[in-house]
Length: 185
Image (cartoon, rainbow, N blue to C red; front, side, top):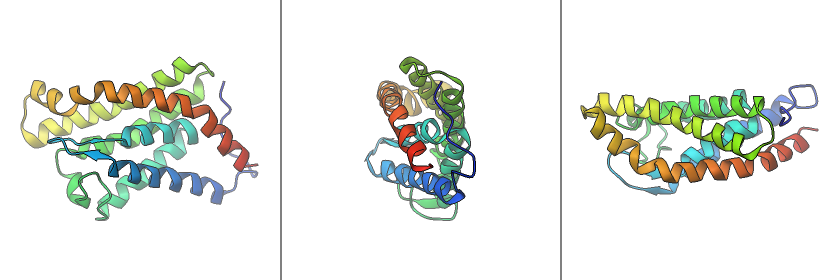
């Protein structure tokens, strides 16, 4: 089983905040790697999102993504389209909100799994499914698309690239957790 990041006196609150901030910034940077598709752009954000939970653990991963969404809600143009709080009422709002749950779920699954690569990959895939779930529901509601068109616009083009992102996250998880554990000692 992957060791849970220490939640003891050895790991100071400053250290935990640094990890949360790091993955918030990583998600912001991943938004800048964007291919503008309509209505949902292709970005590297799902990789940063699931990796945050898988490396930091479910609580801190979730917090890193909640901070990202809160910064957007405050009006900062940190989303892929750089429109700030308008992104939280537009067609991509569900995907952004889904980031919070995805980091939490992927992190929770990794914490309860063992070191097998395929289990980490599966945790990443489940996290991405959480993003899709929130994303397609809001995409349909905001755009008025039927379910089939919402699927084709917001999920189908991203499945294969997101499977690769989950694979990359699975490969980076153990090394990332080791770095976090070493830094907290």
